[in-house]
Amino acid sequence: MISTSKSRLTTLLLDLATHETEVHHVEEVSPHFRLVSITGDGLRNASWTPGDIVQVIVVGAALLGPWEIRSYTPLALDPETGTAEILWYVHGGGPGSDWGASATAGTSCRVVGPRRAVSLLKPRRPLVFFGDETSFSTAIAARATPSGFQDVRFVFEVDSVEESRAVLGRFGLSDAVVVAREPGDDHLHAVEREVVGAYRSAGSGLLTGKASSIQHLYRALRAAGAQGRQVNNVPYWAPGKKGLKGH
Ligand SMILES: Cc1cc2nc3c(=O)[nH]c(=O)nc-3n(C[C@H](O)[C@H](O)[C@H](O)COP(=O)(O)OP(=O)(O)OC[C@H]3O[C@@H](n4cnc5c(N)ncnc54)[C@H](O)[C@@H]3O)c2cc1C
Image (cartoon, rainbow, N blue to C red; front, side, top):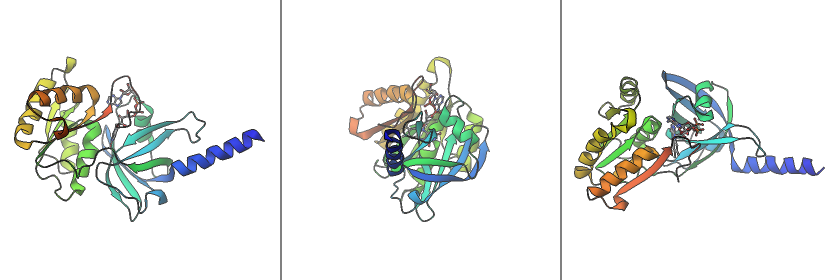
C-alpha cells in the first residue's frame, strides 16, 4: 500500500518536473556529431532564448532511479512545433554520449527545460566565443540572435580539425578558428593567443567547454586587463566528473 502511493508520488513528481518528448529525426552529420531533433507538447510554446539548455534523462525513467540527466543546448527551438534541434557530440565515454549515438526517430525521452545556462543575447558585440566540440550547438544558436554571427570571433579546441571544420562549415561557421588539442594541453598557448588577441579588439568574452581550458583562458584574459563582468564562463564538462549542469 505504502509502496504503491510512493510510486504514484514518484510518477507525479516526474510528470511535474519533466516533459515527455520523442526523437523526431536524427542526422549523422559526421562520425562524432549527430543532429538530434526532439519534439513534444512540453516544448510547444516554450520560451527559449538562444543559449538556453534542455536536460535530457539519458538513463532511467523513474525518480527512484537509477537515472542520469545531461545538459544540451539546442541550436534552434521552434515553439510552434515544439521541436528542439541539438548538435550532439559523441565522445564515447558516458551515457549521454551513448544516448545520442543510439537515438533514432521514435525514441521516447523525458526532458527538463528549456532553462537558462547562458544568454547569447546578453554579451556585447564584438565578442570572442571560446569552446570545443560540446559548444558547437551553442555557437550555432547565435544564428537565432538579432545580430546572428556578426562580430563574433569563434575559437574552438578540438580533437579533429578536419571533422570539426566540415561540421562548422555546414552550419555557416567556416570562419571559426579551430585548434587541434595536443598532449599536455600545449595547444592552449595557441588558443590563448587567438582568444586574447580577439578579446583586445572585442572587449567581451564567452568561455564554454572544458573546465580547465576555461580556467586557463579566464586567467589569461584577466591578466590582459579584462574585468570579470566582461567575460562569462560556462563549464560544459571536466575529465573525471559527470553531468555538469552549467552553474
Ligand atoms: C550548459 C551545458 C550545455 C551543453 N551543451 C551541449 C551540447 O549542446 N552538445 C553536446 O554535445 N554537449 C553539450 N554539453 C556537454 C555534455 O553535457 C557533457 O559532455 C556531458 O558530460 C555528456 O554526458 P556523458 O554522459 O556523455 O558523460 P559524463 O557521464 O558526464 O562523463 C563521463 C566521462 O566522460 C568525460 N567527458 C564528458 N564530456 C566529454 C567530452 N566532450 N570529451 C571528452 N570527454 C568527455 C567526462 O569528463 C567523464 O570523465 C553541455 C553541457 C552543459 C553543462
